[in-house]
Amino acid sequence: MDVRAASEHELQPGETVLVATGFALELPDGLEAQIRPRSGLALKHGLTLLNSPGTIDPDYRGEIHVILTNLGKELFTVKRGERIAQIVFARFERVELLERTELADSTRGAGGFGSTGR
Image (cartoon, rainbow, N blue to C red; front, side, top):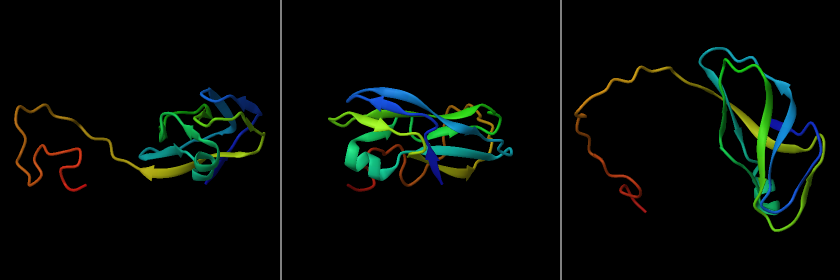
């Protein structure tokens, strides 16, 4: 789903602003909302979201805001009502972490950062 700006902002190159959206959510336990950048704004204007994806927990009740940053080379004006982000809903499970001194073996082991291919 698209997320729209509730107010107008001018973003200079390298500037970051907190953009209000004008809405809040009440999510059931076990469901989170993720705020993600829009690909068109990223490609055409260098706009992206810091802390992406942003997570909205089910116990948060305040207005949703988007941390929008201009990585482009030109001033960008966000207009009220403009689509600035996307929101995706995802299920999650709460887990209990246990401290261990050893972990079970796996075929991958501790290999990371390109260890399974290019």
